[in-house]
Length: 399
Image (tube, rainbow, N blue to C red; front, side, top):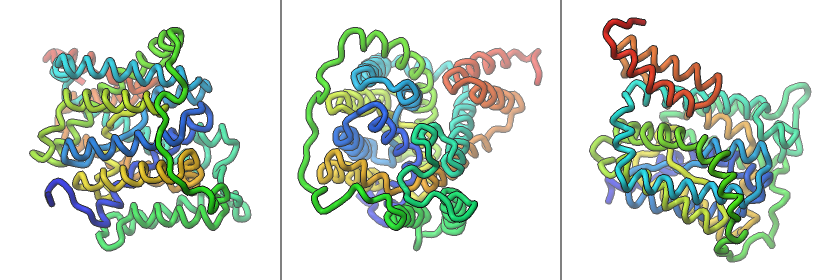
């Protein structure tokens, strides 16, 4: 039991490490797309708990970023997003149960996996910096760097910069501290800062009661929603999911947990995500996945066992049951700049996985994937990287 589950301050701190990725997309899909807050966070919490119990190690849970980003930017309807959620679940179930994912992994060189990890880490760092300086897409849509704080600047200096610098320094000082875990101090300090600076105005004595998720709160999507979702959301998302949320994630889990992650296989991860998306569809939530970036975040801030999953899962599910749809008002307490600091350190942890590469051609593949990702997207980088890696196996070619 102690090997699979530990319940201490390090596990709690580690459980909070990926909030920088999770909360901005989740909150934006509630505010801009109209997803059900209670159902979203209840399904999220339940997926954390069940995946941790089953796999027996720290397991990340994240939104599907391609679907999330495009849906937010285009203000898509809940029916279109839920159709994509159900379709992704079906595709992942087929890919996992048939073993097709193993064939895909066989044709994916390790250098491509490292390229996906470096690219994902770099994107996380860039997103984190954007949250700190106030230039992320979410902040632009809200027309404010810290949309939920009453104080936006101290003199000429934006308050997000002040909170971000303070959070960064605290993280650097406490990153390896077991007495005062960095994740716990930074997130706790962020919640206090949010309260002091007026972000908790939506919460009051009448906010707390008992809630359970509704089944299919928006009804069943129409056929047109499924057609649209398949072409616009699912097909662009699929390569990134297979590359980052399956193969790069399982590879990283083996690096971190060795034989303890024996259950974390490509097939089981696909089936796990499929079941999560079926349940999220039923509760009006968002598309869910695992991911290498999330695991790097949890691990860097102290998570080492499935106890971290139970911590964060019970927090989300508990808040959803107690607050219902008003859970969004509680989560707004965390300043965007604090979430940005979590993203920066998580991204750096993931990017450093390329340090085990030694071959010049492997580094070339990694660099190409990063460049293509920055110029277009991770799915294009992943697919092109596979082609480049196989071409470079020809001995007559040099880089």
